[in-house]
Amino acid sequence: MSMDYENYIWDLGGTLLDNYESSSHAFAAALWGMAARVVLHDEIYAALKVSTAFAVDKFASDIPNFLAKYKSLEAVTLQKPILFDGAVEVLTSLSRAGKRNFMISHRDKQVLTILSDAKIASFFTEVVTSDNGFPRKPSPDSILYLLEKYALDAKKTVMIGDRAIDIQAGNAAGVTSIFFDSQKTLSEATQNIRYLQELLG
Image (cartoon, rainbow, N blue to C red; front, top):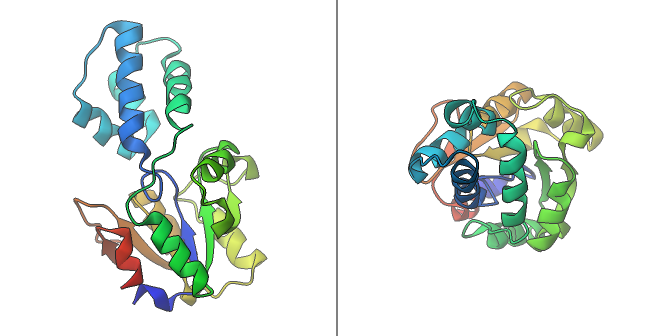
């Protein structure tokens, strides 16, 4: 099934990196520290899954410099990156099978440090970050860049992500799209998985 593909384009946060949990704690700490405001963990988690901007607008739009404070606290948590169960196993199996892995992240070059600290940097042929200057997903530009640069066959390439924008970007670029979420599915996706190990099925 999924192993039939040759090229795997990954999102980072929420797909390989289980950052929403630690980010939720950092967000809650910033809310409490700056405004003595308490919001339920699950509400913050769900909002961050949409986007950071959405969460800030929903819970902290009236707090000056909140984003900067939150980002500084989040950066500390990312110094000890936690990967989803199966991430290393899947990347290792794909690499050994001669598949190529790529990454597209909205984060800046900090991504490279995260991948290094998580000991998975060597699995990736190229990592596209915000420093590359492409429009953010759901724009397909960053995927199209990889397809062209490495002469990838779109029919043998898959985009894997945990948000609708990842799937929309993949679909717009003409590649297969796989939605990863342990709780829900997305009808726009070519395939839905609850566990990363399903990619090896």
